[in-house]
Amino acid sequence: MTRLAAGPVFERVLTTRIVAMPAALDAARWPAGHVALRTAADEVLITPPLADARVADEHAIVLADGSFFGGWIAPALALAVLERECEWEVPHARPAFAQGMVAGLPVKLWLESERVLVLVAAPFAHDLAERFVA
Image 1: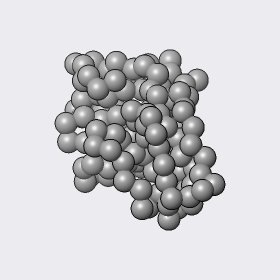
Image 2: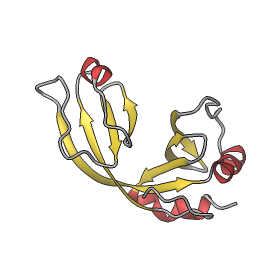
Image 3: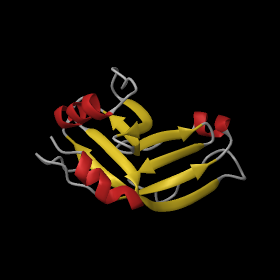
Image 4: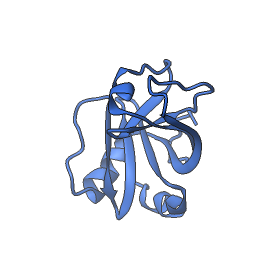
């Protein structure tokens, strides 16, 4: 999933989902090369998946999660679609995480200077592919 194609290439995105006390997630450090999306105060999605994820919360829930679909796209394409289809302001600083409705889809975005990770729940895979075109 690390390739960056000229056009969008979307596929199943494997993650590790961790639900834990917010303080435990605040203190956690993830390995280089992983993207950690803090989807809620008590939840993080990490991709690529971690073989051995641990946080300082003995009651943490750590699960392999294959319920997302998406991929890395060029920032120019992402911004073109977001300007056309997003009613909320996309963060200007990079890297940044954002989530909300885009073109009628609940989307999670990880924005970097050179690429953007776009994720949706797997049932929306076809819709994502239709909407994220130039």
